Structure formats: structure tokens, C-alpha cells
Length: 275
Image (cartoon, rainbow, N blue to C red; front, side, top):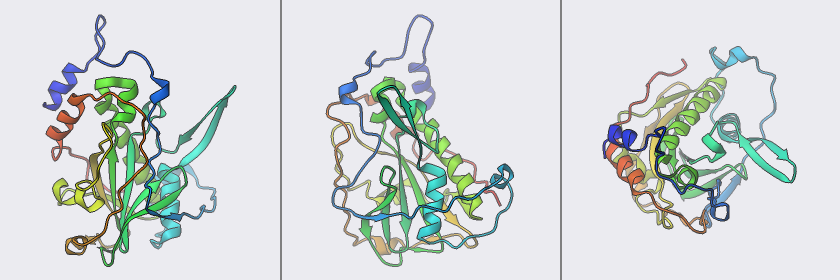
């Protein structure tokens, strides 16, 4: 299905709403946090708090070395949990990057020189899903995916809209965070999705029913020379992709996956950087 057809089919009208369950199935709400089972966890250090002025978001900042500490800072200020809200007996967490309904369909992967990692938001940790050597030269690669089920649980067939919207929120948050560190975060438009998605194991992953991830976008993150990825060094990597099921039961909306498949490789993001 073409994007425009999906848009028209999933519009709301005064006398007709787009298809959804029509209620919130609280017993089967998808877990907003993905966790890999056999992956080695690297707990990230908590960055030192700095008093930064608003202008720092847009100005050129001092370049920081790319290492575990600064990657932790980058993730802290772009995609981490930053507050807990309490109302009566209820409590919930919110993150730096905004999300429709606080459902957060996005997942974040980093390809560093020594391995492929998933960002575990809840534990503020990197999960090593594949260990490697000399995978990336200069900086690192950043990949965003979406799990539509987290949105379709509430929004039904309109969920793809919110996945794309929230990916945009994450891109903006990531670019502001990278700029604070004096880094560039540049959309990858010279390598297609078919070559990038296997690097994080999407072609090998065995998803539970209706829990498939959609590749959204990938970025170079660096401070001087654009990173280079050594594809040959990924061929024999051993991926650990088993994860904890995110929902007990779910409903599948085929229109979401059909449309996502049709529009992949057609998304165009600005290649502008902050520097």
C-alpha cells in the first residue's frame, strides 16, 4: 500500500473513526522496554550534571572524545528516562524524547568498533548482541527501529503514523544531544536499508507474534571524519537476539506492515548537520 493510500484509509472522519480495538486492553499492554536475554550488559556511567544554557543546543560546542562516558552522556540527553510521574496510586516514567501516548515504539542500536549493542533504556545499559573487531572506523553508527505493536495496542491501524512521528522526535533529540558534545549526527543516505538492517540482526531475529521491528533510520555519529563501516567483518558475527516477550496477547494490523514494507527506502530525511 502506498503512503498516500495508507493516509487516506486510516483517517478519522466526523462520522467514522479509523479501525482500532475501540478500548484499551490493559492486561495486554506491550512492555515499553525491550530486553535481550543472553546479551552481556554494560551499565552506563551516570553523566555529571552541567548547567547548560538554552543557546548551547544550537551553538557550536567543544568537541568531546567519543568513548563510553560520552556515549552515556549522548544517550542520557537524547533517549533516557528523565522523570517519574505519580498520580494517586499510579506512577509512570517519561523520557527525554517525546512519544505519542508515552508508548515509545522506538528501539536504539549502536554499532561500535568492538560490537553491536542495543540500548536498554530501563537499565541505562548497553546490551552486547554481537561482539566484533574493527567494525567501524571513526565514531559509530546509530540505528533506530520501531515496534508498531506498542502503538497499535492503543491506536490500531493508525499506529504507523505514530511510529514515524516518534522516530522524528528521537532524531531531533539525538541531534541536539550530539551537538552538545560537539559531534555530528548525519543521516545515512549512501547505504541502503538492505545492507544496514542485517548489521543489527534484523534479518536473523525471531520475533514473537506481532512483535516485529521496522527499520526506521540510521546515522553516522562522529566529530571530524565520517565513520566507515567494514562490512566484511560482520559476516561471521555471532548474534544473541533472544529477547523477553513484550506482550501476552496482541492483535495484528497487516496494513501497518504492508505499508512499511512499501515505503522503506523512500523515506527522505534532511542530511543537515549542526556544524
